[in-house]
Image (cartoon, rainbow, N blue to C red; front, top):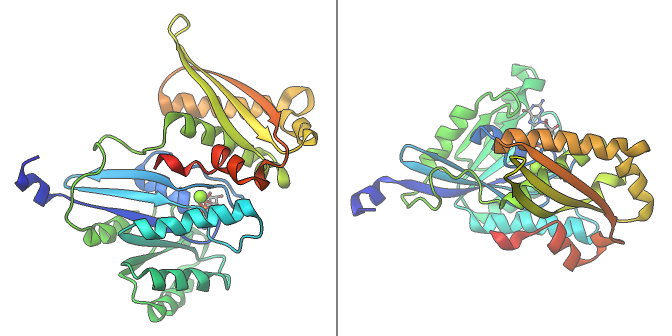
Length: 304
Ligand SMILES: Nc1nc2c(ncn2[C@@H]2O[C@H](COP(=O)(O)OP(=O)(O)O)[C@@H](O)[C@H]2O)c(=O)[nH]1
Ligand SMILES: [Mg+2]
């Protein structure tokens, strides 16, 4: 790049943080116009920091979607929260996402973290599709008095409402700098992790209680089958106890089939290829209680 071109570009890392389930991952996907981060109605769906890259004209924003910050009781949850807190250190700008329908005292903890991070912060008031306009004004008023936010933007990530303004506010804060990624790249997630996450999303959508939380997905093999013109993918779904195997597999294999079909269909759409998805289920006793297993199977932060 010539010196002139470099001076003209603006770039920065934006950390998307907030309580669990407020819509952080939904927001990231909408901003990018494609899915890089999985979403479910259950909390703690996102387990590690996911980068989503938006390049337009002369700017590049690297969004960092994070696990929800909450009072974590066990090792696994503590490691997820730590992952989110790490993101606060590496970013230039903070995007605090809040759910306007679900105000809880824990949001004060997020505000404390923001204050101590001492970085330009935008507050996105999400899920405005669920409330009346007049309920919004007191919330905006309340937060504008609490902290010197660079902007407070009401949005609906789900309905794609208010996101243009949100993006404008972020771009205003971007410093001059080079593009860190190829402008065509939308995430730095390796294909094997993206596939594992999509499979995990289907598990989160269709299983209940402890089961989704006890699962981890590892892609074992991705192979182009030229003869059949498809992508062969083999993955293992780990669960914590043999007794959970039956739930994931289901009566007559129905649950596993459903998870497999939904994941395959979405992957075919995302990758634009025919796919053969071969799913296996294995018990790995209490993997959530072992840091090494968590790192290898669920919070693979080493790649970023
Ligand atoms: N009604 C409504 N639901 C939303 C909105 N944004 C996210 N959701 C839902 O909130 C739930 C949690 O979303 P997710 O993106 O996984 O939240 P995260 O845990 O903060 O990443 C999902 O069921 C989403 O469909 C929104 O703007 N409006
Ligand atoms: Mg999420």
